[in-house]
Length: 368
Image (tube, rainbow, N blue to C red; front, side, top):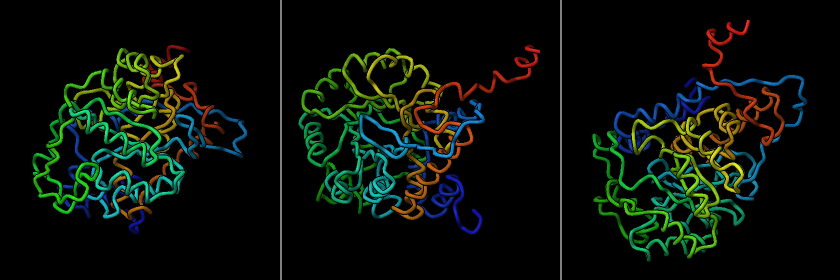
């Protein structure tokens, strides 16, 4: 990292690796088991190439779009990730402020170090915030989380579906990571000091969760429901049948079931399953450059969500660091649109991309 000025998201990650507590960094950076899914999430983008148009007026390029009818300045949002205060003492408050300043959506995790109310108080009232919820086995706890979310002004519920049990995360096992005593899961333990026993392996998601729980959420809240973790066409169709408003194609950042496809590889299947419905499709996992964002939108994602990169920015300079990461990605995305000959986000489509395998000489020379 020349002159200590980050030039890529990898530079922010390297700074976090050098400066954070090793156990906390390992908790953030690690995937499940052999981390094949984690690596595949990143590598998949290299298997798609861009096909730029020329002689297109790109003097005015706009990245603005909407998600669930809410305006955002760019289709690059921040995904729910746990325990932001491991990276910076302002934790989720800093991340939310950065998203508000940039004009995009912040999705707060159930497992946050600052409560929904504390985060809401840290940002303007019009800041777009979604809340990620782990449905609890006890309906009264789930109901309280939902009501707190509504009262704090969140605009959607993001229901995680892919964590009935915690994946085997070797970084965490080897480091013996536990949440430091000075931090807690604020949405559950407000005012209660963490005694140090709250390992991340506690607080499992309700493993008996089924589609009836989505119906329960719809019965207690008018908020739009986005489901996170859909990976199969038939599950996407069931989500539509059960009245969800959005789907985040996600494999939990490669932290749950190893040997899964990359989210980008699954995205076409889910987009096709949702065609003709009102359900919006989003993606997380592996986004590291503006061209990555462009490729996801070309397949059909409405927006993308970044997880680890926001944490690396948080570790670098708190709120300002998260803003830097978002601004870097937004600049790269806008530049990609310009160089690809695409002045509007809604003009991005599959004609701008081609699988690298289709450009092998075996295929191209046969056309001569």
